[in-house]
Structure formats: structure tokens, C-alpha cells
Length: 122
Ligand code: HEC
Image 1 (cartoon, rainbow, N blue to C red):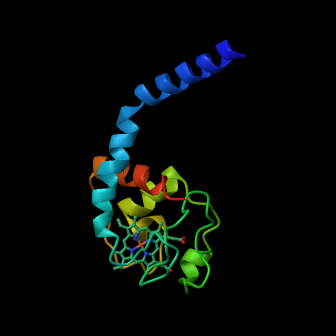
Image 2 (image 1 turned 180 degrees about the horizontal axis):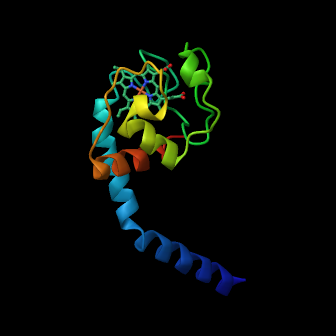
């Protein structure tokens, strides 16, 4: 019993130590998110854009109380790393006809950091 517990702790420590890049990415992504914060809250309140709370796995165009464009409502997928990356890179190319007034982030590293941050939002 005790040995098993120590083993689990060792595994946890290894997982934490072997993955420092991911945590750093999310921290950098929080800074990139400043470009989104004027329109998107993280606390569940809607502004110019829908809240991004719990965005991972959320069906596109479904957040309660927000009036989406027809294009976004007709998008039948749940947000994940790949779809977020494509949308942030070029919103009009990813979802033609959506009305997010944002031209996109060309820098792949910035998008990777930002997506890592978005996936931490619960
Ligand atoms: C000037 C305001 C504005 C800015 C800046 C902005 N957005 Fe948006 N965003 C919107 C609006 C408005 C929508 C809804 C678009 C629609 O209904 O077609 C939206 C929709 C979204 C959605 C879809 C959410 C859902 O519930 O399906 C995501 C994801 C998103 N934005 C992420 C971002 C990220 C990440 C950034 C920063 C890189 C950003 N947005 C910058 C206004 C903005």
C-alpha cells in the first residue's frame, strides 16, 4: 500500500517535471490573450464576444445568452486545439461569414501559446 503511494507520487513528480514547456506556453498565452480580452470574458459573462469560459469541448456557437451569427451557429463541431488554432489564425477562412471583428494571429508560436492558455479555462 505504502509503496504504491510512493510510486504514484514519483510518477506525478516525473509528469510535472517532464512537461515544463506546456505550463510556460499557457503563461505566455495569457499575455497573448490581452488581444482578445476586450471582447471575451473568462468568467461566463458575455460582452462583444461570448465568454470563453470552458471553451474546450464546447459546441461552437452555443454559449448561453450570446447572439451568434448564423455561420457560427451552423458550425457543427466542439472546440479543440486544432479548430481553435485554425479560427485564431484566420477567422474568416476557418468559418466563412462569422462576424468576429478580428483579423487573426499569423505567428504560430503565439497561437500555440494562446491555445495552450485557452485549454486551461474551465
Ligand atoms: C473586437 C471583438 C473581438 C476580439 C478582439 C476577439 N473576438 Fe472572438 N469573437 C467575437 C465575436 C463577436 C464572436 C462571435 C462571432 C459570431 O457569432 O460569428 C467571437 C467568437 C469567438 C469564438 C467562438 C466561441 C463560441 O462560443 O463558439 C472563439 C473561440 C473566439 N471568438 C476566440 C477569440 C480569441 C482567442 C481572440 C483573441 C485572439 C478573439 N476571439 C478576439 C469578438 C471578438
